[in-house]
Image (tube, rainbow, N blue to C red; front, side, top):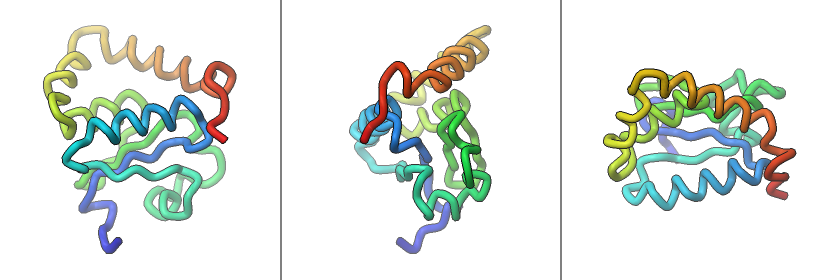
Length: 123
């Protein structure tokens, strides 16, 4: 290990959510240069890196910690992470079009609220 949050990009996700695990696996395959570390929020390491994960605080959205230690969540986390992925910088520009950030946030929130009901648990 030896790395700290401030020296790597970390995506913290819900390992009990089937949609979250599938999405994590998709991003992991996309991340051919291995620029992102993935941590289930249920782990002690994730809780050490983000103490606010204790309890149910992170059930609302994934968290992304960039190499400088900045924490974002939900759609903002995805937007922050995209430029690290091949062709992701180009895709991330879509999130700066008028109206797209708000619409994406509404959709993300709705899916996150219903993810267990719609997609089931991973285990």
